[in-house]
Image (spheres, rainbow, N blue to C red):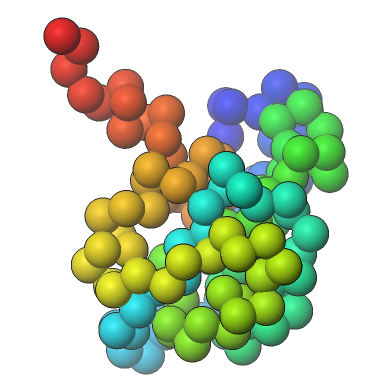
Length: 129
C-alpha cells in the first residue's frame, strides 16, 4: 500500500483489504473473468451494484481517497457472470477466458487493493535492455 501519498488513501485501502479477506471464496473456477481496464475506469461504481458476489472493490485515489478512484475485480472471487461488463457505462470491463484474464489483468491494472499485479510491478520485473 506504499503507492498511496496520503494517509487517508492508505487507510482506506487497508480497510478495503481487511473487508475483502472476510468475504467467502467462490465455489468453482469460472469459464470467464471480468477484468477492469483501469485506464478507462471512471470509478463511477455502476458495476458494483450488479455484482452478485460482491467481488468488485473500490481502489482509492493516490492522494485523496475519493479523487481519481477506480474499481477492481477480485479475480479470486469473480464467478464470470458478466453483469458488471453488461452494465458498465464506459465499456471498460472485458470478459476474458479464465486463463487469458489471469494473464492480461496486470496490463490493465493501475492500482490494486486485491493484491493483484499492476502495470508498474510487471514493468519493474522486466529486465532492462
